[in-house]
Image 1 (cartoon, rainbow, N blue to C red):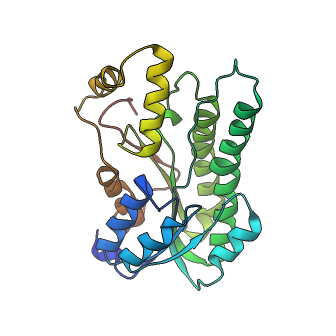
Image 2: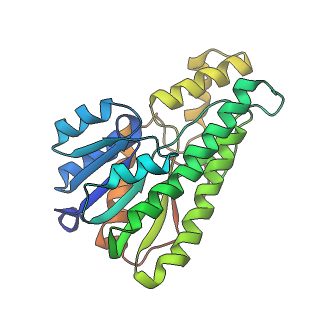
Length: 251
C-alpha cells in the first residue's frame, strides 16, 4: 500500500493541525509529495517540517482557492479535510449562531466543492479524492445542526462526484472519523457537557463507553484509512464512506 503512494502528489486541506496534520504526516512517511492548505498561517511551519509546500487559504473564497493551487502542475490525490464544527442550536436566533451556521455550511460544503473543482483541473484520469465526513454523517447530535447537516452533505457530494468522475477513473470516497482528540472535538465536548450539566470527564467516559473498542483516538489513528483509499489497494472502491469510529455507529 505504502509503495503505491511514493512520489504521489497529494493536496490536503485543513492540514495545519488535528486530523489533517495527522494525515499529512502519514503521507509524508509514505514518501508522497505534499501541498498543504489551511486558513491558519501555522500551516507554513507544518509544511516546512514535512518537506512540503503550502498555502494559506480561506476555501470559501474562489480567488484564494485558485491562488492556493497556482504553483501546482499535477495532483494525484486530493483530501478535502478542512472543516468547521460549532454549536448551532435551532432555538437560538442570535446573530452569532446565525453567522456560525452560515460559515459552517460555506466551509464544509461550498468550500469543499470549490477546492475540488479547482483540483480537478490538475488531476489526471485515475486520481483519488477523499472527503473527511464524520461519524455524525450517519447519526446526529443535538445542538450541532449545521455541522451534522454539512457532514451528511459530504456523503451526498461523495456519491454524486463518484458518478460524475467515474468515466475518468477518478475515485471519490469519504472517511467518517468518530471521536478523535482534536481541538475542535474537545471544544464540542465542553459545549455538550455544559449543555447536559455533566463534568467533561464523565461525558467523555460515556462517549467512549459507547464504542465497541475502548479509548479515545488520536489523529494518527484515522490516517490509515486515507492511505488505503488513496492507494492501489482501493482501486475498485468509489462512492463509499468508511467509518473509523471504534465501533460507535453500525455502518
